[in-house]
Image (cartoon, rainbow, N blue to C red; front, side):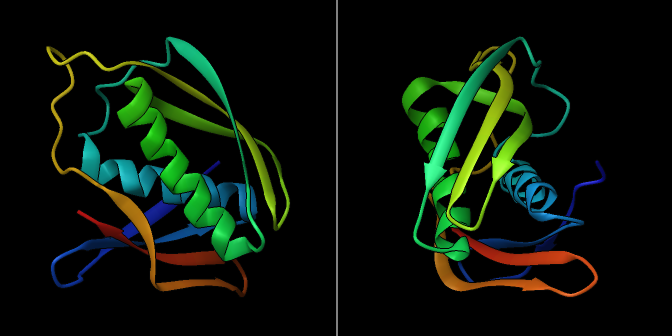
Length: 138
């Protein structure tokens, strides 16, 4: 899987444009893009696995629910994902497994406090590939 994202400029917040060949890859790219702001890459080990399921009324809502659920897992359960395996995805439901580890303040140096993925300027498109623009509240 060649998940990709790029950082975009936004006043007061941060954002990405994520890309993927299919919906699963798009959602993985968006998750990796969000965690780019939270913690430098390469410092998290895939020691444990954690299942996650989210549902929403539409695809846009599903993307926001997915990203915000990852923040709940990080902040509420102190679990830091290293990788994301989407096992099932439709326009209203996503089931995935996170590979990661418990937050270790001695090893994990956080950059930004991403509070939420927002609907502000949210856009999902499909041409040759899927793309999504997401703005994060920091």
